[in-house]
Length: 66
Image 1 (cartoon, rainbow, N blue to C red):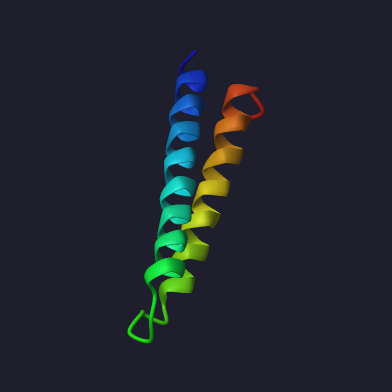
Image 2 (image 1 turned 135 degrees about the vertical axis):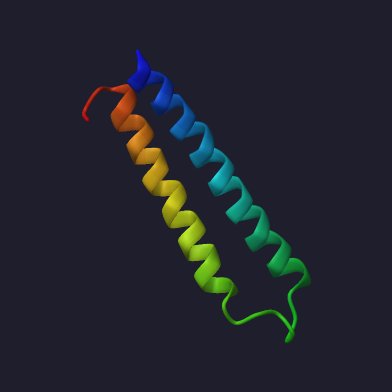
């Protein structure tokens, strides 16, 4: 039962992480200019990667793979 709750928590965190990465991308696309940090692409990629990892861990915990 604890694994399922941890899986649900991971899924919620993954959805939040992917949503914030998408919102940052959308905001940068609309309002980005030459003063935008060149490291922004790295932060978008790492945020999306963490979201995907959390999504797979959460799914694995719910279906009891781990």
